[in-house]
Every structure is written in C-alpha cells, then in structure tokens.
Image 1 (tube, rainbow, N blue to C red):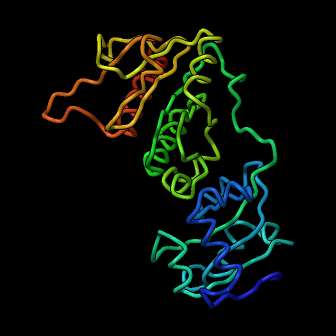
Image 2: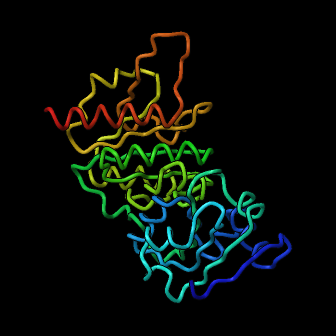
Length: 271
C-alpha cells in the first residue's frame, strides 16, 4: 500500500505520540482525535462524519489484502498507513490473536453529535449520570443502539462516548447512537422544557418499573452502582425500581439500564 511506513521501536516519536493518545483522555481531546480498534467498529466510524486520518496495523494479525478487501482501496488513498511490529501492536491493543486493525479519526470542529435542543417530546431517552467505567458506558450504548433509542445524555462524567474502551465495548455503537455530554442541570431543564416525563432510580416512594407508563415521552435516569443518582434529580419525576428477589440489592448500571430500556420498548411496541 502507498503512504506506508514501518515502525519497530517503542522510542519512535510517532509511536510515543499514539501511546499518549491512548493513555490520556485529555491528549485525545486536545488534538481532537478518536482512536478506533476493531474491524466492525472502524466500519461504523467510516460511515459517520468523522474524518479518517491514519491507519495502524500489524501483518501478523491482518494482511494488507484483507484490509483492502474489508474497507476498499479508497479508504487507504492519501492517508498515512503505519505498520508496526507484533510487540508494539500488542502494547497498543486489547484484543489479541484476532484479525484486527486500528484507525484514527478527527472529531469535526464544533460538531455536537446530539444537541439538547433536538429532544423530541415523544422520544425515549436515557440519562447516564456520573458513569466512571468506560466498559459500562460502552455496554449501555450497545443496548441503546439495539433498541434504537432516541438519545443518550451523559451527565457529569469524566469519560465520553468516544473513549477507546467505550468504542470497543459498544462495538462501535458510539458512532450510531445520538449522544451528548452535559451537566445534570442542563439535562433536567431541557427535558422539562420539552415536557418529557422523567423516571429516576431512587428507592424512596418508588414503584416497579413494570407498573410505570413509558409510552409517552420518557427519560430514564440511572447513576453509578455505589452512589446511584445524585440529589440533582430528587423530586423532579417518578421514582422507579427493578424488583430484587435475591440477596443482592443492586445491579450493574449497564444491566439496569438495559432492563429499563427494553421494558420501555416492550410497552411502546405492544401498547
């Protein structure tokens, strides 16, 4: 392939730059770069409005012919292609012993994937507050795409939908689901302005989620396992719960969100 260079040293300037992007969220944000690992994930990113800037691959895990066959020759025209050795590749990626590649994309300037002004009064939304683990957020976005959710509002979180682990755990659904990053206050006001009913996962005075009515415009609010939803959301909507019939009294946030989203879809499909 044209525009290809071979990197074999961990002291290579470009390689150290790439590692810094993978390891530090602030470096990715500063440069406006999104790192995507995985063939399916890259396909979804290419179908989005993000600009492809570089390829990274190791011939021990995927051949140039397979790359071209998967993504087409046009995807490799006029874009730097970096071939790295097996040790360097394994230090960059999580998936091992599978056909794999990595691509870098530039986040478009002034692009907001989903704006709070675009909320629909009859839509179905998920508010994820204070999420700390990118794996959990990735799993949430994967389910949100599966149910064709109208949008996910990520509130007061230090990670975003385009964190490399989030992209990987969502199988690239970060590029498919309408998402926005905002504060809980901003989300609450926007939902109120559109008269979207809010369901929070406080236990106080809560009703079973199976007894709630999600057929109207709905926002489901979930928080972290150990802290739950913050007091910002107290008194602004109906409190709901998921029946816990065993000894455990809480679910992983991605599991709880999945149950709630599917219950909402069930009601809307069979109302």
